[in-house]
Image (cartoon, rainbow, N blue to C red; front, side, top):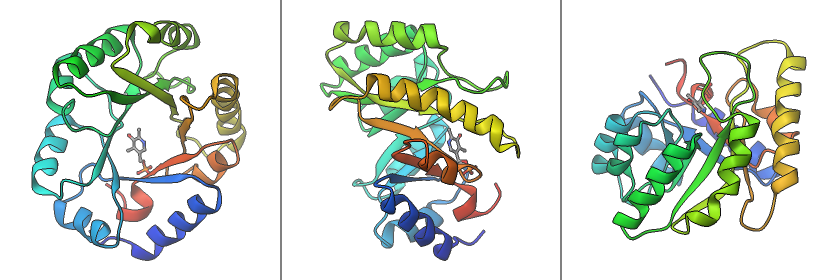
Length: 214
Ligand SMILES: *Cc1c(COP(=O)(O)O)cnc(C)c1O
């Protein structure tokens, strides 16, 4: 599968125009294709699977900023804790406490986002509102990790009204808690990033528009 360089620059420009960061989602893509974007200057890549990320991390340049965006099991955290740039998928107290444990072990302050469940789809992960507030309430107990904001995933739908309602929920939650510390709203994928950028997203995660369908 060829990398769509034109699409990459187009999306990058749209993100920059809105002061948003572009995370290129490279799950299931080869290190060769990732390297093409790296050579164009891109550094932020998102991965969903721990083992796949481990392999790529050793094979690719060390200044890549790896974002973990997939479902995480507590027993896998230790593998990525030493180098991960931003974990975007913390959605339970158990995961957050284990992340804090691992941060202590590798002597680094690990940044993360709370994944907020905004879609009704049963397959979607994320904290519900009560859990999200509970996680925020326990942050002071976790000085070695740093909550930088929220991540959300809209439903897979062609109905913009559904997506808009979901984006409204997370962007108002974000605005409620936004601060110098908590400043990231990671929202928007290939099919809905334009809408996300109009709902206060400042970090979009794009895979298939750049790499083609997985
Ligand atoms: C796969 C994935 C993306 C990218 O999705 P595309 O539709 O390919 O752009 C973004 N965010 C998360 C959490 C993902 O799992």
